[in-house]
Length: 397
Image (cartoon, rainbow, N blue to C red):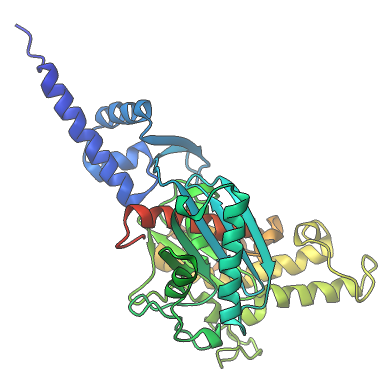
């Protein structure tokens, strides 16, 4: 007599296995098959069989990802979330972009305006709402089809009050609740997060951080901030103010910072300061006449003299990141923002400092990459945040 289980028992066991995998993927996001086994306690064969079932029914996607460090290339499994059309808003210091798209990163409509948002909060919020309506129009749909919305802003917000908190960034926004303000203008709930956090979400879902559950995303632009993903989840800190690495002080740096301290990281390697240094190098050479606009940073990274400036900026940034690597032991550091377009010279400088100042074991474990999504990482991250808010409205992280 056969000892094989009855078909009903097999079906029930497979159902429990699929449920366990869905629960792990919903909590941790993208996971490899090996990580699914560790998270659920299931055997390799059980995971393989369940993933095959979920792929067949269209509940999950599986995509290859680049290797981290010296590891082997692998693939990751993610839940396929049917959340309809989503609205994303990216508010930078000098621009606002709205997009309508999907959780998979497909953009169906988009609109952008250039505006100094720091000193004009109400105008910025009105413009964001107008751009959202234009993006919806371009997508060929009406507002009723938008299932969720999210926005990234370049400021720290208190999770407890939902209000802009840091008095030195977006000072005229202090006390404003951007989520409530945007929600009132748009007529739907909007979740709001720091722009570097949104960049981390975008890169992990669709860019250089796919399949990496411990990463640091650095937005290096007019300011310097970081978004942290730890154990597969966005980490915001006790009150939502984590990642403010731009105000870590550098010994010997003389410049005054807008925070009132001297020698903060962003006074040395903000995009404005790096451009000033690049303009000086070009003005003393033969490539550019004084007063002309700078070529793109990616092009300057191919010229020996200007590549040195970009590499030196990477070294300075890497000195701060080395301490973060020692503390967090991430699998990857992803450099985004406008400075991230410096490419290989920037990565070389960051890598050099991490190898010099971080402990060898953790330095060997971390990969340094430039953003795969470029300056659109925050916009794609807002689409991801909107999708997650639709699935878990109490805590979209």
